[in-house]
Image 1 (cartoon, rainbow, N blue to C red):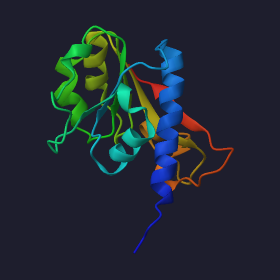
Image 2: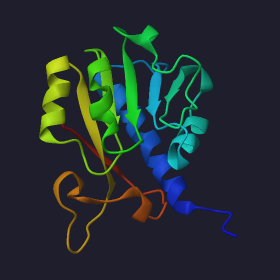
Image 3: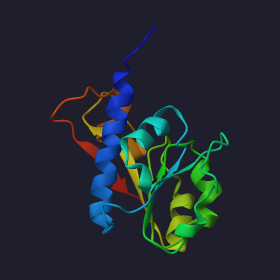
Length: 167
């Protein structure tokens, strides 16, 4: 039985680094609320456990969300939405977004140009986690160029998390 899953540890670590960098870049406070879309999943659960419990709000299609589901009480306030659910999830929730919301997507594939445009129309910005800085042969396409997926990286002190703003 596999007891250690180093790929998930690398992924959680990269997500943590990106959250910290995006909060700084977007001017969010260190204790800004974080909505985790997919927070009950394999990686989402691990990410949720790595963050202070008092700042997270879990939204998950598995029905194990916080008591009140989508955190409407945050509307109009600075917050970060982390998508670690599935590729269609952001599109299903974009109608609930607000300008002060900063979106970080970890899901493959990266949000489509149409979805990025929808987020821009709302007034919020979106970052996509590329992965870890490395080169691959052949190189990864599109939103993953210049990196490798988190799950393919080996954890080390020199590891650099890559992300890019797409909206």
